[in-house]
Structures are given as structure tokens and as C-alpha cells.
Picture 1 (cartoon, rainbow, N blue to C red):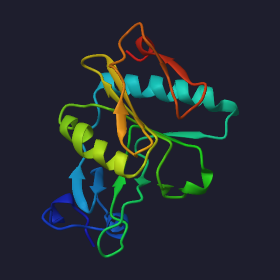
Picture 2 (cartoon, one colour):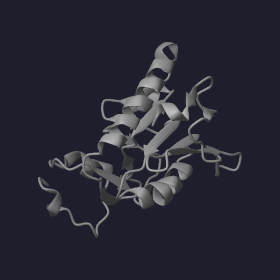
Picture 3 (cartoon, one colour):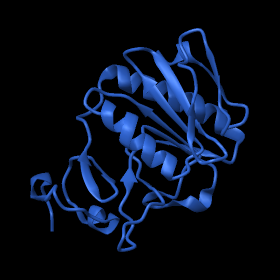
Picture 4 (cartoon, rainbow, N blue to C red):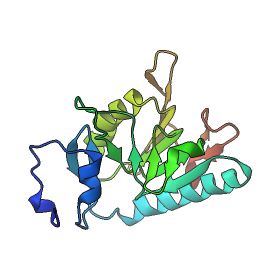
Length: 192
């Protein structure tokens, strides 16, 4: 039994069943079997943005069938390893799921409708490259990338070829209209 993060062999790939058995307090994500330690607790600006965003989506969904969750919340993506094991579990800052059959006691099993990630120092590369590709490969319809330091939001939407097309950077004074969550709009300034 693994009770300390340092017991993990980071040169080895793991499965979701391994992940469930770990008994340590550090938060990690499993991307195609590889363990990624998450940044320390988010800073105050990150938490403010996350809270405001969660509240606005939650308030909008009050009468809708979709549900919103905030990290830590496990999202098991539909990417399996060569030995047919589920080996990808991430914890987006905000996750919106409209198909409740994807929800179980462990979190979400399948591609959510929207994931929203807020960049933090130390996770920028992973969010901008690895998770971009992971979310695109998982066919998540909409991916929001929020830049606290620049106070910008970029939204990626899947096209008919299953590739993300990025928006212009949304700035203070702009209004975002979600394509995956019909009717949801957001004033960018309200996040920052």
C-alpha cells in the first residue's frame, strides 16, 4: 500500500485502480498513466476566480439538467492504455456535466461538456499543452483557459474534425457566450 507520495515510482505508469488505492494527502492527476503532482494550494486570486466562476455557472444551472463541480473532483477521461486499463484522471478547476449517467460516487466517468482551467504558477505548460491535447482527444466540447495574470479567457471549441478552435482572448469589457451551455453568458470583468 502506498501511503506517501515519495513511494511512487514516477518512471512507471499507473492505472486508475492504482490511483484509488493511494493513501497520501497530496493531490495528483494521472495522465495516460503518468503521475503529475498538482501545484500547492491555489493562491487567493485563483480561488476568487474559481469561486466567482462556480457561483455564476451554478446560479445559471439552477433550473437546468446540467451540473457543475469544482476541484477537487475526479474526471476519468475516455482514454485507455494499451493494456485496456483506464489510466487518465484529472481534476479541472470547474467541470460541467449534462449527462448524469457519467456521474458516480467517484466523480465523472467520461468526457464532461465543459472544463474550465485557471492557470497557476507551475502548471501553465501542462494546462496549455498536455491538457489541451488530452481534452481535445477526449472530445470535450468546450475548454476554457483562464489567465489570472493577464485577466484573459480563451475558449476552445471542438470543430467537426474533432479539433479545438481557439477564440480570441476575451478581455475585461468582453462578454463570453458559451456554445456548449446554451444561454450562458459571462462578463469577463466579473471574474477578475
